[in-house]
Structures are given as C-alpha cells and as structure tokens.
Amino acid sequence: DYRHMSPVIIPRGYTKKYIDGKISFDDQVKEIDSAFSEVDKASDVVLIEGTGHCAVGSIVNVNNAKVANLLGASMLLIANGGLGSAFDELELNRVLCQHYDVPIAGVVINKVLPDKYEQTKHYMAKALNDQWGVPLLGCVPDRPFLGCPALADLERLFKSELVCGFDHRYRHYNVKDMNLITTSLTRFLENIRTKHPRTLYICHVTRDDIILGFMAEYQRNRREEERPFEAALLVCGRKGKYQMAEEVKDMFEGLDGAPVLVVEYSTHEAMKLIHDYTPKLNIDDKNRVRKAVEHYEPYIDFEELLRRTSE
Image 1: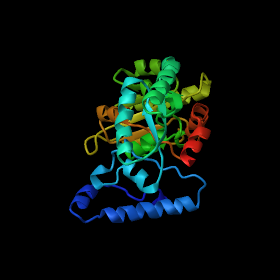
Image 2 (image 1 turned 135 degrees about the vertical axis):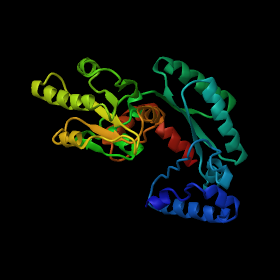
Image 3 (image 1 turned 30 degrees about the horizontal axis):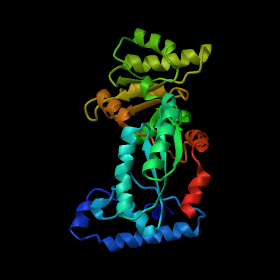
Image 4 (image 1 turned 90 degrees about the vertical axis):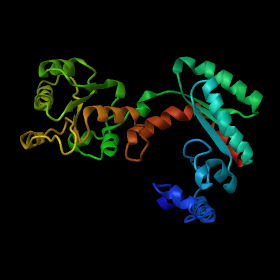
C-alpha cells in the first residue's frame, strides 16, 4: 500500500500548518509507527529510505535520524564520490546520528570516477575505520547511463506526451548529446546523419522546416536502412504565444519510429530543466532497473550490511 510507504508527506503549506499547531508531532509519529508495522508484518527485511541528508524533516520534528531512532533502525550513509568533500558531508550526518543515538551500519560511496576508484576505496575505508570504527560497505563507480533521462521521464518533467514514437518512451538520451538547432535545414540534416544516432534535438515550434525535415529524414532512413534511427525531437514554444500549425500536426501520423515531444516552454527553459533534472528509477523502466541492479550488486557487501543491521 503506497500509504504505508510514505506515511508523512510534506506538500506546500504543511510546514506552516505544523508550526501553527494544526498538525501535531504525536499524529506524525502514529502514522510512521503504523506504516512501519504494516510493512514489517509483510516483509523479511524493511528498508527505510530517508529523503536527502539526516536533518531533512527537522522543521516538523521528524528528521531522518530521529525517525531511525523512533523505529530502532540502523543507518546506512551514502555520499557521492570523492574523499575530502564526501567525508565532510558524511561527518555532518554522523554527528546527527550520534545525537539521536542511531548506530551507523556502514557507508556506501556512490558515483566514483572510474580512474579514482581504487584510490577512493582504499583511503575512504581507512579513514572511516580509523576515525569512526565503521566499515565502507560499498564503493560504486559512476555509470552515466543510469542518470540519462528516458523520453518517459521528459514526459513527466514537462507534463506532456509524445505526439509520435510511443514505442520508444523508455529510450534514454545522454544530456551531453542534446543539440539545440539554430542552423539551416541543410546543416541540421548533415548533423543528424553524422552525429551520434541517439541524439535529442531541440528546436522552436516556429521551425516548420526542421520539424518536417526530421520527419522526412526518418522516412528516408527507414527506406534506405543506413543505420538505426534513434534520434528524438523536442519542439518548444511558450504557452499562449506560439503553437504548432495544424497542418504540421497532421503529418505526425504513422511516424512510430520518430519520437517527437511538444512542450510549452522556451528552448532555454527546456534545456535548463533537462540539465537540472535527476531521473528516478521506476517500475516501468525495466531496462534502467535491470542495469542498476547489475551495476550496483557486485560493489556492495550486502551480507555484511545485513549482519550489521541484524545485530
């Protein structure tokens, strides 16, 4: 039950209601206890995911460290790769765990640069053991693919839907391969035939030539079978100011292999949103979930984690 997975949700206005006394600390704790009890009864192991750092939720008196204390849970701390900055970040969280008497089961360092992997693993493990007496349970090299948004992610981000190419909603695109089209149609066609095939192109809704050229290139590519057509087109235009011509919309019929997404943002706004966006794992994106499991499993000592959290 989703209700038991997120017993305390903090939407807009929640914090002010708590401070005004309209939401009580005891009511929140009852919801957390009840949810934990229900999940615990149906599970062999309960993983409690904290949002952000240990202090998140302090304004309503249910930060992550305090909740761990209330439920008698151990803490697994996770930080992104590096040595100095990562350890400093971990130390801030350790102090809060210490304040609430929460045992730290271990640490996992995530997204480590591959060429710094052995160095990071060695020195972080030594620092944690020497200063905290806590083991490094995992050191995971970065895999950029897992952070690449799928078209389905962009649909959610922009609250829009693909106008064609629905079968490719879970095709992923690297933000580094995003290409804003400001050139002529001729130059665009040269790019789409020579650049990385899985490129996300962005154009303004007034560029009918680019939109039609994208469609025509898909048809040509499918006819000549030069290479897989994996490009996608994001068409941008501010709501109420620009819109796609109906004659152009009619031409999307039958373009199942050419994903096109129309969004009501300027090209600058759209690109910034994509750059700032962190795609989340979800049950529908089976490819990303499978890749994540395959990538992380060998680098984390799950047996030691279970042993230390069962003590």
